[in-house]
Image 1 (tube, rainbow, N blue to C red):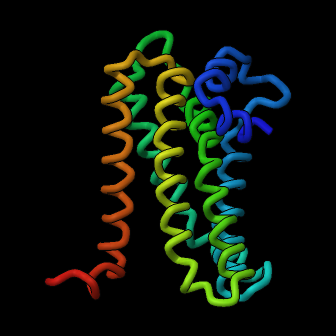
Image 2 (spheres, rainbow, N blue to C red):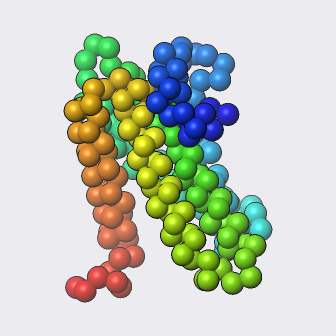
Length: 191
């Protein structure tokens, strides 16, 4: 339920989560957030590839997309190292757990993409709708990242702007680096 509240009222909910004890019964956890992310990614792959939630596709997709939380771990660590240092700084696991709560727009996007592929007679004709949903998820995700940095980590406006820039540079550099290193971008690059 916390994921829904963060999507509806991000700044207020992140302030509340940051003020709560990390030992609270419903406090966000890294394991819960990572499993939620990997399950939704894997379910999207399983549904769009086979039309059903096949256990083998689910498990193999969860393993093959395990780099996504690792990329986020490195980006969160960079942000904490550069912008959230100090004696009152939040522990890494708590900061990362709070970040994972803000992935709701992307989780909804993947569920929507799966549903679009499964339930429309000609999914290729629905791609413009998917493009609009992608933009909405991206903008919404940026707002939630800003709320996480500003209210969740308690950064000021200037530090929030710098932290957002660093976060997205690290994420995009690592993801593009991964796809370049694995040779998946070479066929479309004019090299």
